Length: 319
Image 1 (tube, one colour):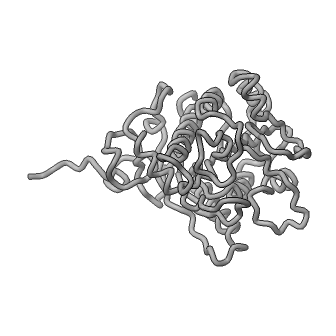
Image 2 (spheres, helix red, strand yellow):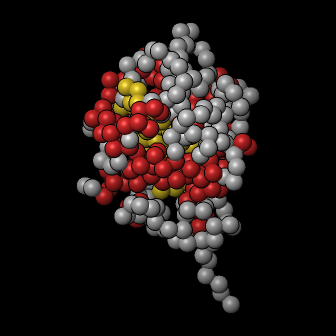
Image 3 (cartoon, rainbow, N blue to C red):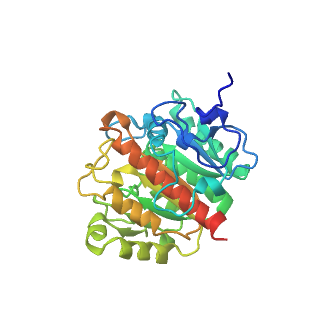
């Protein structure tokens, strides 16, 4: 008897489009059950991981983040992402491109490997949704995106500013990337914003800071309005460090800081940004070894889906 294949859609699905139910507890764990493929012909968004975490200043383990996010995503891959009124996979051809390859034994070569990985995808005409790894990975990703799109507006969710100075320019450090990005013109700080910060750095490098206290006191609607006013219609790179969430909602990370956003607040802020000119996105710093019941990985997967909905709304649905 022939049995129709309805599982392991990561390798058996015929189309790059659509959502179909598959057992949440079984099967190959590509992100949201998208097809695993290195063929970028006709692909709108390539999901990939950068399992690099040797730039961390506290607990390691974010190298397992891409795997953890993919596995957690299977719990939400069976239906349309709530509360959006369309399924992004009906409008976007999305593949899981797998992970960036690099030589862990030659750390100084890793940034170049990440940048080349991004350039390959972008030059093929696909946008990127990237999973870290520690937050350093955003720096080479920004280099590749700025080469294509020009100076970017950065929407940066984080507990930390990541703008600590590196005058010698030699550090591979997850706390210095946006100091470099501002100095090198990869991002335009006057059109960029950082949300959820709750650590001390008095030099903001020109970025607008909407710290965690402002989010809690002013509310989601005011924060959304401020972000939209800041970035305008400039090309936006959106980076979400999972430690922007309070440790109650994201314990599985390397540098947790109390007093952060709830998952609901973060999702509401992202959802309110419909219409921004999103050109690239990442979710970083998920370290599953410190997680409980996959709540951090699940939050990351859900935030990533919110980003895909934003991308689909701007580039496909609201045309």
